[in-house]
Length: 194
Image (cartoon, rainbow, N blue to C red; front, side):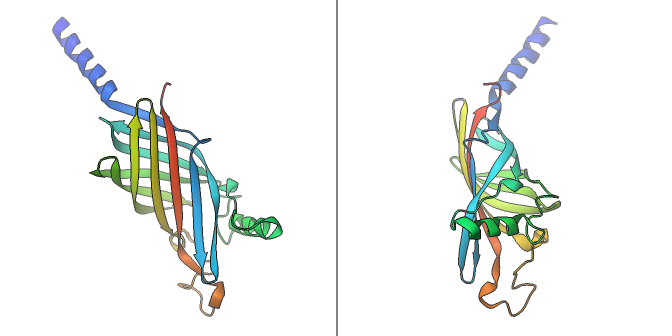
């Protein structure tokens, strides 16, 4: 009986050492968004509300993030024009943040492509609509800390954001907004329990 308990205890200890969960710091992590139109581009930030990453033997196995959509900012213009654009992004033409306060990303699969490099397949939910996205990510564990970067290209029309899209409206001229926008994510996290 003792030997069985010893084996089970050793297995549990071994598993707990190799499997690690890191909680993402919402204060130190950032998400930068960038969207382009025929006549230029706009960019800003949006806050992470919560997130976690799971590793086994220092390899990423899964992750989950929630984004606080009403925190979206505009940084390439100032004053009244920035306020107007921010209001428009929060409106039903774009992200409907009064109704859909959160966006969510949950990994489906993770493939290692090199040292600290991954191809991530995930479900991304925006405005209550969930679609699959695939993107590269780099993540490294150092002791109780994790750092990572990812760049995610998103076709907004898949999430019923069609305002100014040349795919759905004709004659937009220089008012046309490209369908794809980019999220550049910088993550900093700490091992759960620390």
